[in-house]
Image 1 (cartoon, rainbow, N blue to C red):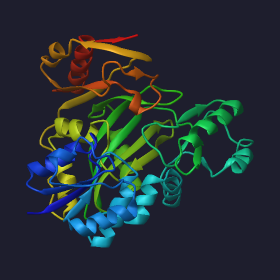
Image 2: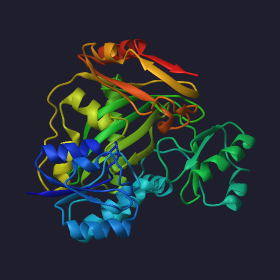
Image 3: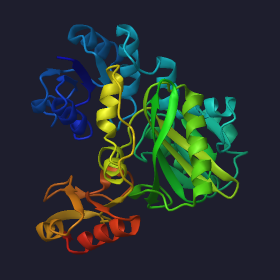
Image 4: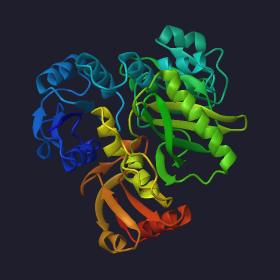
Length: 393
């Protein structure tokens, strides 16, 4: 029996754990949290942090897997890359893992390979910031170089906002380094890519909905994109060039960009499957491609099926809730009975205090739907949400 080591056992990695078991693999998981939801579904558990590179390498040596992977999270990719190199398994290099998880190194790679990107300044400490703040143009975006989920991201319209934004962004940065970028304006997309034998294959383009300024938290995704074909070709071309620029030679990539008046420009990418149920749910619903299974198989050096089976609409919509104490949720079962509703999920419990939506962790839950067209899928999501009453005091 082939063995796969999955780095992380949280709700984000659970689909990979379940899929690996379904496919007949012997599954090991590594997570610092002994109560992580995915542990009971695995065959072996290793109590190690997903970002402890040396620790993950030692676990991999003991477990001796045929493949190593993670899902929907960036920083563990450094440990995955190091362990794959140590064991001679398929995977990205540590250099590529750095470029795919550090926004400063990433945008430098884009620049070096002629990949369209915003202007930027990398700010390593306060003394550098004090120099940059005098020459920055507005509006601009400031964000940590090493975080995700919209944490620490702020739109700044003037010097005073940038100074406040620096305090927030640097606090959310593990290493204290932030990046100040041109504020790109236009529709936002993600592109789901699988790289096989060094060749990027675009599986799907996703239209995004965000909260907008100041934090740009993602509140909805729809597949396939509604953009015309000639725009889709530009998006696909940029995604493939960006993937090659950072050196992803095998496995998935989640590429984010904005369509500006000058054409599409990169925001960032990850050398892993996208979160927000995009790759675990929306891609299979819209294309019939099992992206989780494909990622597992490629990690283990096997052939992966990435051929589309159909073209349907799929969508996810997050509940937009105010701050307060969650008192109750009604109407869920009625909403689930609507044809086309695939999943309704909540990630906060009754009695919890909710904050304003400033990052992805603040969202209370979502509805996922499939339809014959994108309009059908969106209408089903919205109908289901309208039947659910969320009580917040």
